[in-house]
Image (cartoon, rainbow, N blue to C red; front, side, top):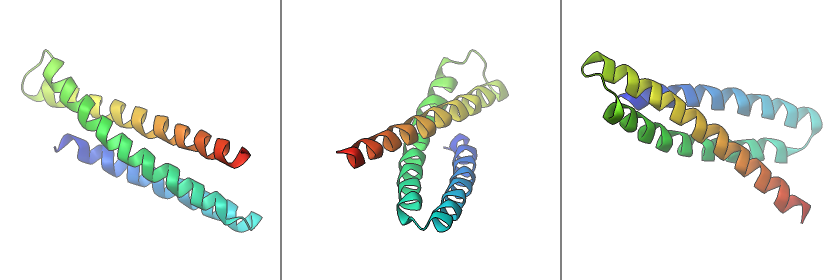
Length: 104
């Protein structure tokens, strides 16, 4: 679906920045677990973000009153909202789960 390509590029850019920041912090502290945890959180978040982006984009097009260009705009906005929910929601869940496992 063309509407989700923008969400994918947005997610990949965010992922690169966050992993780069984690790699820098990991290098400064000498702890490779920091960057490993960030990579796992970002990969899971990207997968969930893309799935929810497709769902929200399709829902926005179906539920939108507009036809033609208006439907594309509604679908695009739905895709961005869905991607953000999926990306950050899954990332937070994986981060909390990782902290929980480590504390056991």
